[in-house]
Image (cartoon, rainbow, N blue to C red; front, side, top):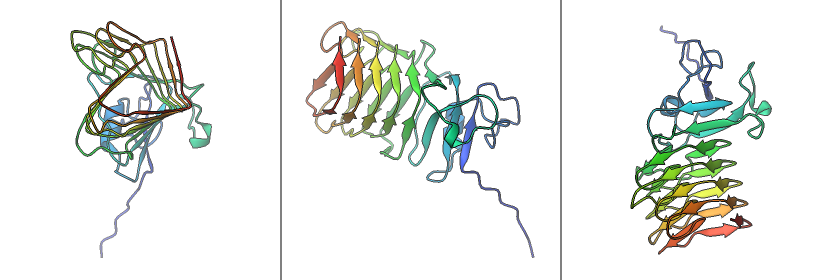
Length: 232
């Protein structure tokens, strides 16, 4: 008779200052790279917990169905979920002013791919969606800040968030601010029939573009804005 010891982890841990085994199994042995943790998480069975800090993957990151990425954990001790405070423990996913931050194009990505409590900032691309680029996919974003992203060039559109084709993503309690596009939509751009995302309790502030829609540019699409504050 053979016996096996199987350890099932319900979280994959990420901490920028971790110096352990780098396997994501605990805060001590946390990964230092967010994309590695997303790739390692068991779909529908594990979440990704990220300690406060700044994370640069070196290239754009992609989300996965059934995996929720939670920012906002203290970067000291062994915090549990009840210790999470995304307002106090700022968790930054950074493009290092060199590349997009989050990119998903198709792949069947749906609302079960979630980012919660992260700041998505300093993305930069000669094209669309420096902060978040979504095409034919619909992940969810909660309690996020999308800021200081820059889309450049003649197709520099949707610097904060660019969505195209079939996309029914939800953004809840998010702030989209201080993003700049050389062409259209510093903050948010939605493009083509079927691109019908929902924004609930969001703040869209101080975004700029060189052409149409400093804050929001809507082209042949039907986004919904519910109880949102749109300024500057």
